[in-house]
Image 1: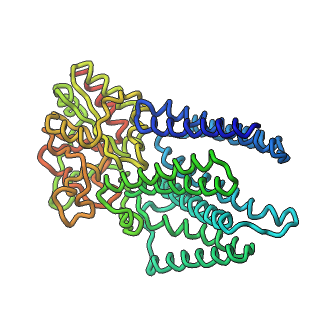
Image 2: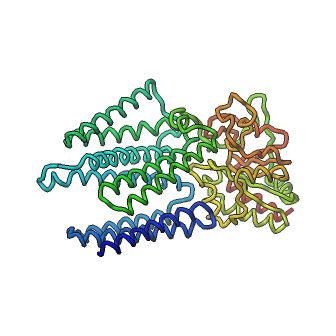
Image 3: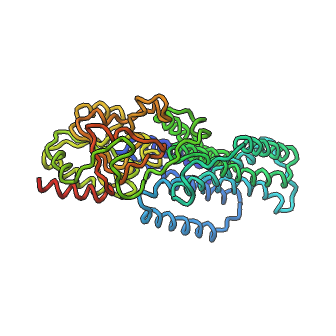
Length: 470
């Protein structure tokens, strides 16, 4: 392939990445943005394969084709079978495999001279990049799968801590630096593999003390790590598309991480080292209506249906409970039933609702909820003061008034959806259990709040039926 043509095609792929990423920033354009980015990656792969032929590299096409078929088949299967509740786990797994791929490619570059019987004589800057690719990729791999295990419930979602944890992590990090310097100076294989192995351990210890409440931040940060590892690997193998694509993912992941931290009003250091969030929001079955001397008022689907049917403005505040119950389609049907009666329906979306950034947007988009009905936190709070009924579906910490009023609360200062400013609040929840932050929610006991103790899908389906009988 002509070098000028190669450069132009790589530039076209990079432009597709940038346009795709830009369009991913809005729910209305996200689908086309994803397609544009995928086409850019396809172009980059094709150009890379033909470029390898140009320089005379013997490609084992049977393995290339097999990789495309197997990888594409697995991707298609996951796209068809993975539920929306499992999307955060899938994103975590993708991050992990991205980090592993970068580490393996960089490791192969390190191994190649030895396998060919030649001594390793790599420039220092290349050697440093190889080492960093392996370290960041290894941390991303194990860290992402610990996040996956927490999200999937394979291990506790609560922070896992032990005495002297930060000291141990610091020693491990110092060991990685030491073995990396040893590798860069001597280009010896032993310290290289030791540094990689210790990095795998660091990835595990890095994520286990982070609680479920901070999973959106962790997912965004590990996504950034996978991009950084890919960009470094691009420098190792001198591939412009990989450098640009990795840099875009790394930068956007860091920006998203910062946005998530701002949404929780907590610095990244507190998220990573604060061991925040010790409870599971799913709660147990059966809804106790009282906790100590505090009493929550329970209600029935028929009573809620009457309130909804005669409201002018209704706002739905979705949370992870909506995703767990797979209730997004039932919610859309309830939405339609209300609009047929002339009721205006909007959705208040908190940036950290759910288990990953944009979780609620993706969930509701799947149910064909109009994009213009999805309001960010500022627009939602402005409308809440004029809202007749708020329907909180499986959300907890993001509507907890303690964030405004209790200076001793761990979530104090976190921007929340001020649902208590509406005339009436109905919370659909299986119990009075705390959210990911592990703290009680005073909203449940306010005079204008009623609790509908039920599974979200069952409750919303009953509401939709009752609306037609009003």
